[in-house]
Image (cartoon, rainbow, N blue to C red; front, side):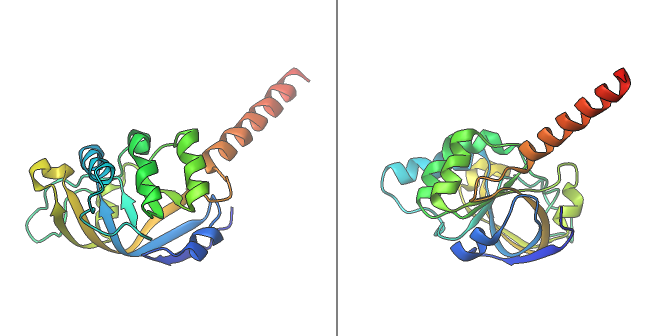
Length: 196
């Protein structure tokens, strides 16, 4: 894997998304939208009713995260990723509306990966367990919709060099699948050596 860290700025263009490959390390700067399950349900309901979302999703990136309350003098509390697979049921309508990027942890369903290829979107992983470190990349946070959901409200985040890794690209690349295949080959080779 190339150790170069690519600098990305949101909103993401189709050209930028097409240039990314699974395994690429990136630093993301610009605006992200933070939303978890409850906010996704409301956004998808709005789209199904032909209503506008609280933000224009075209070219934007959603970070699957619900921050903890900020301590005094901080912009945000812990800001670690949540499991992306929980958002799979709501992802396709957002991709159809123009969403280009998603950040979370864990793998995505086959249907979601196919929709990412079709709609030219990419899935990044942020490191789970590094919530305090990730929070340092967040310069500003404000609730823009669904305030009644508390930490699951829809947030607008201004970020500088938020670290992530491309997991699923628009060419069908899947870093997790590659890693599993490589691990399987290594395990087979070790077992063969043990029997020699």
